[in-house]
Length: 78
Image (cartoon, rainbow, N blue to C red; front, side, top):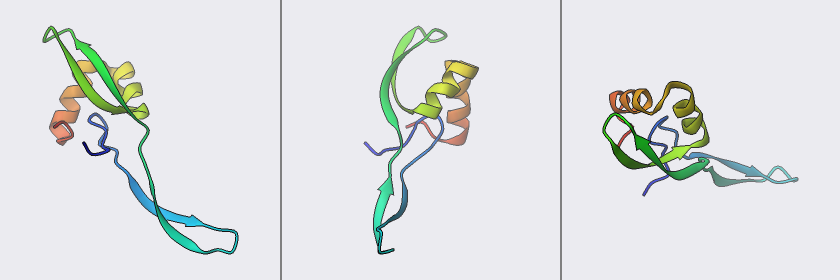
């Protein structure tokens, strides 16, 4: 499974390690992902999502149902 948040759509970014001598080597900045189970009250089911820390805060702020609707509109759910 790829490292993409199913709520916010965040994914790994590319960049460079820069040494003391200013030498650049490629690296990736991974997302802070968690595999979490949520109880979806409206559907009366448990669902499992790959969620970043920002996605967890979004779910806490607007609720699971609204977060899933927004993610589905933007095409982040798979």
